[in-house]
Image (cartoon, rainbow, N blue to C red; front, side):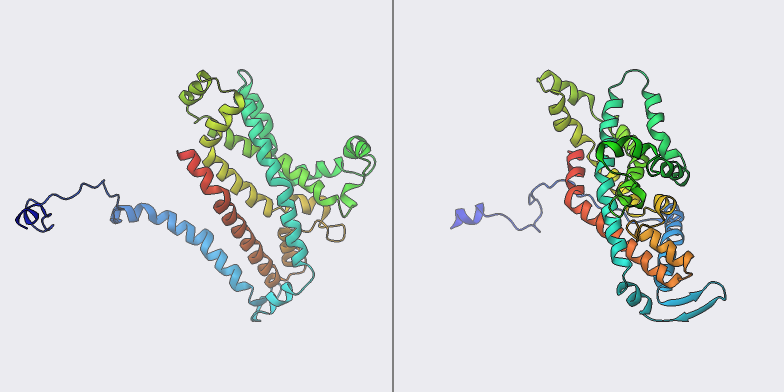
Amino acid sequence: MHLLARTSPEPAGRAGAQRPERGPVLRSAPYGRIERLLVAPAVIGLVVAVVIPVMLVVALGFFSYDPLTGALEPVGTDNFLRLLNGSELLPAALHTLAYAAMTVLPIMLAGLLLALGINTVARGRGLLRTAYFLPVAATLAGMSVVWRWMFYPDTGIIDSSIGRVLGVHDWLNSTSLALPAVAVVGCWQGVGSTMIMFLAALSGVPRALLEAATLDGAGPWHRFWAVTWPAIGPATVFALITTTRDSLRVFDQVAVMTQGDPHGASTTLAYLMWQRGIGFSDLGGASVVNVVLLALVLLTIVAQVRVVGRRWELAGAR
């Protein structure tokens, strides 16, 4: 009993008692006055440029506003019920999702392949970057006019070349081909910015790991899959989010090339919002469409981050 008493651990409160060593605990330091002053401009800009406009759009959905007379009348949820029970909102949402499905993956894949190809070129790399980035710098509405001429039935470049091979023509007046034609322009315009993101990410891939993989006998595909792909994970997540956001907000190509026709087959949420707000002076209905579009963008991005975003970010940080 005496031996057990002597060998039993002493209470933690006694002097000289040894405590198990623990690693450093990282705790966030409280904001001081200087930190608050430095963060204040960003917070104020966020509130003024994002939070307040979103709140005004949501609030306007509960009112009927006439821009000609300035009359503002509360209508409760009538605008939401009218749009949700109508025949325009659901098809526009489906067309928006279909457009995103036709553009996001091709833009990501083409941007990655172009970045990998340009990254291996010894000479003329700057010229290639500039050439592929030109569609991003060009005005999309102006270039959509050119693409509309290219899709002109029978005599346009598309019908005269690809159309004859595939046996299709008059894309912009076809209910099944109008939206894919608009998606072609979206892919052409979006590849350049995605390529630049991947090129920036490729410049940060550790050269030592690539050289070690080469010495171990790894081929180009194994080097890419084991070293390059994990290293560009965070950039891939960022490119995926921005590409999805831009695809869901498509407007310029639709407004210039098809005006939502034929028979509403290419009407997206952004174009429906413009149509309700500007064409019909229905600002309350346009606000409802805007809220639906915002919710769709947020839900899609959250789903992407949860499914693949965290995995790719962890792969890049390992």
